[in-house]
Picture 1 (tube, rainbow, N blue to C red):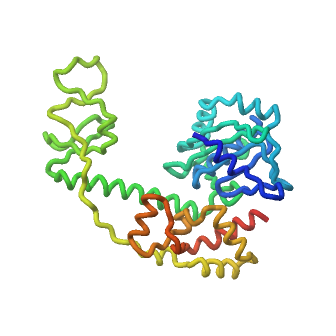
Picture 2: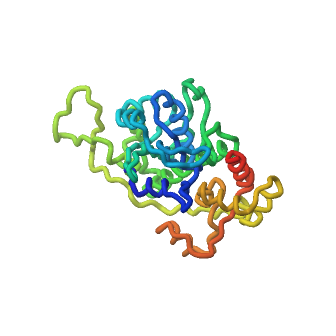
Picture 3: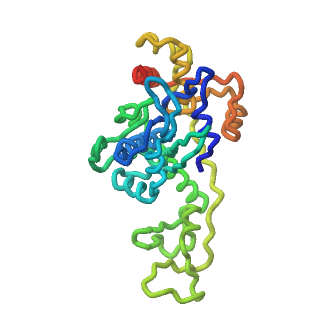
Amino acid sequence: MIKKEDVERLLSLRVDGNLYHRESQTLEFKEAFNFAGLAEYFRDFSAFANNKGGWLIFGVKDKPKRELIGLSAKSYDQIDKLDPEKISGFLLDLFAGNIQWEHEVFSINGQYFGVFYIQEAKIKPIICKKDEGDIKNGEIYFRYGGRTQKIQYPEFEAIINHRIERQNQQWIDLVSKIGKSGPQNAAILDLDKGAISKNDSQILVVDDELVRSINWIKEGTFSEKEGAPTLKLIGEVQPINTVEVVKKERVNRLKEYPLSAIELADKIKAKASINKNDIWRIINENHIKDNTDYSIYNFRNKSQEELYEQKGEIPKGVPSIYKETTVDYIIKIYNNEH
């Protein structure tokens, strides 16, 4: 649910009357909404989904000065007539992958603004399946600073690595559950064939969510309709909710993230004429410290790390360390701004 206070924060003004926030990795401004521009908007949708999610706000003039102008009567009318089901259908037709989004129209200080929020995709990348305006078949879009463009190699590699890590973790979880029951008691449920392999074993290792979603029919309780799919239940089915702890080797963080903030700034200044204030601004506006593709917090002890994981709080004095690829990423954002 989009909250009005979040939109008011994004549209807050400086003392000089200019907008406090500028377009960034998670924010895009548009002056007017028009059905003719849907392909361009969808391009931004996919770019946000492939990164960390983001906001698309209509009724804001970005050049030459960022200024709140509100929606025209025509733009308001077109946004008001949006059919979410049709838009979601267009997105499914254009892109491989699921783009989750929502929209609202808010009245702020007597002006109306159309607001779209696009969630970060759970499974990336979102890939274009067909040509439509500026959208081209086979392309993958990504949000760089205040700009949507085709994805570059470092970000594409990071997405692929995340998918591999996610699959590996799923295998680890599954093997842990099998280890808890013992391989002699485990069976394989083939959802395509509807068959359980492993002789006559009565113990089935199934993910907890899958157990809750299956309709199990206990023998003798009622007569199923002819032709309806079913799994006959002999005995009782219980989800395995406790698993053995898998010991993981602690990653050498400094090997993957070798740069301190000062070292990062020095490397950037050696390759481009960017002052430190702009470097820190870009890091903050694009939430680079929270993006593990480029940076992580270098916790000094386990209690600091647990505080962050449980409450999202960063203890004072905890530094960030950065990957080498962050250097070129920040330079790219700066060049896009100028």
